[in-house]
Each structure stands twice: as structure tokens, then as C-alpha cells.
Length: 175
Image (cartoon, rainbow, N blue to C red; front, side, top):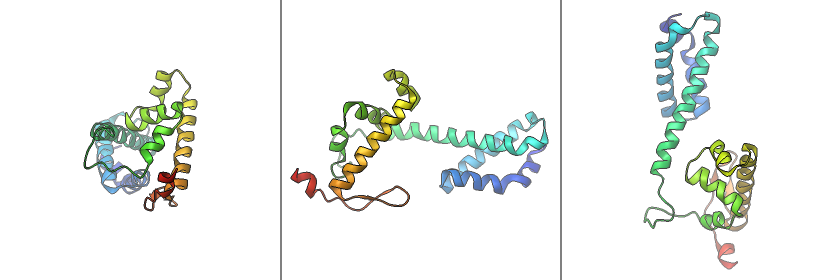
């Protein structure tokens, strides 16, 4: 099968598949381009034409994962240290205090994942606990943080799970 034939048959479907996964046109365009580059470079390895669709979509899934792995590395390197004083850093209400108030087992995994940018699998090995235990701790920590934000600061989560509202720390400061 030739790259042009694959392009003609799958380009729209593949692009919208990537867009649905990333929900970002700019990222989708980059991933789509990388996917077709890989398809073109490896099309000679495709032995059975009837398996072309599965093969193409697997390449796309791998490229999506690769793209976000690379992005996570850049974000982790660019994320400012919360402990350093900076005029640009504006804490969200009492969120830093909420994280510091977490029980140590939850605070530890939150710091390793979201501040240091480590993978859950690596954290499980590092802490000598199961991956399921790491995931459970993350979920519990998020639930605690969510409840504190709802109770104290009057933030709300919209239907997409995004934080909305403005801080109102009267309750936090009073306690």
C-alpha cells in the first residue's frame, strides 16, 4: 500500500480521531503530521493491506502518547518552584495550605506526580507500593482537595471538571 493511498482513504478520519483525543487543534496538527511521517517511513513494513487501518491508528495513538510525554517534560522543566518568591506566581486562595495539610502519604504522591512530574509507575517502585495504591492515594488526595476548595473557597467545578468561580477565603481565614 502506498502513502498516497493511505492519505486518500484515512486522512480525515485520522485527523478527527487525533483531534477528539487531544481536544486541541494545534497539538492535533503536530501529531497528525508526525503520524503521517511515521506512516510514510514505515509503509513498506505493512504486509497485509486489510490491517492498514488498525496499523495507522496504532501509530496515531503512539504519537499522541509520545507528544504528551515530551510536552510533560517541557512543562515540568518550565514550572516555577512554588517555594521561590515570584511576583508572577499567584496562589489560588489557600490551595498551597490545603496541599501542605494533606496527610503525608497523600502529600507525597501529589508532590511527586504534579510538582516533580514523575510517572505513577516510577513512584510505585520508588515508594515500594503497588501502582493501584499510588492511584488510590492520588484519587483520595484529589477528593480531599476538592472538598476543601468547595467548603472553604466557594470554587465550583463545571460540567467538564474545570475550576470556576472566584476565591472567597472568609471561611479559611476565620478558621
